[in-house]
Length: 324
Image (cartoon, rainbow, N blue to C red; front, side, top):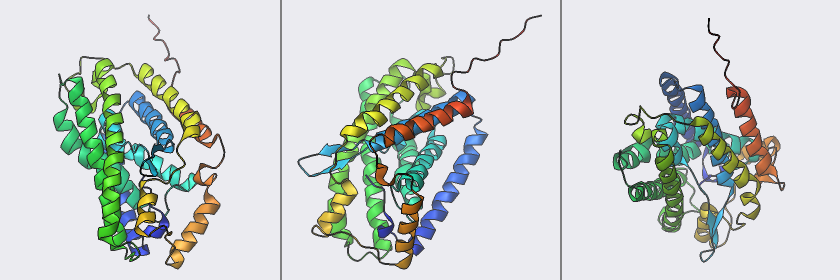
């Protein structure tokens, strides 16, 4: 929904966004290493990355408005993996989408990481979701926390896109008018994302409460069935990537729709040589620009799951201890 293209970002803004995102990713990797996540937790991160990758390809229609939206997943990943590991996981998904599928501009990758990963996982989750969901929280409270957090995260990300385009000097998109289209549509998209996030977390809170980051310290005696959780999310990833993506809406996403409305149906053109050069480079690098090909989503999702299985040995039986 908020994958910024190269046309929205000036070279100077791209450098600043790249520095901020790189710094956050380095800090996230360092903090995740210090937290000493188990192989099972890291395997879950890989599977959740595949799940979010697949979910972001499924655009749901807002037919009465004439646009579509998709899951972002920052709050969901932070709730299951912790804020820093969740942020790093989503950053990896966004980088993969940009480099292999030309989904979001290379120049804008830094800001896409900030808008879609950092805001949800590092800002909204710890400040909004985590204080609301506590041990013994009712299912309704969990759903409402997800609904509120998802709505706020997507709306803040949308506002950030407008601020970044204004700072880049994109005069074709007057900030006030652009914001007038971006915020209402992303409030609606955020509400759908929040509801989906809340429902998923409600189910997990019922079956695997110790898996939720907000409850983990209070549920230490409880064991987490990582094999069951990773298997279910892996299957969900394949179903979404293989089936749901085939029926995804072809309507423009919220950002594309907002730009078109602001330009009265026109399209935003590249304004600098760097924008044109990076656009051409990205099209050459991409294996399947815009996920062209019927089963591209399924193949990519399966590849992420296979990579996770190889690295972390999902399903590999542990060696038995030899008793003397």
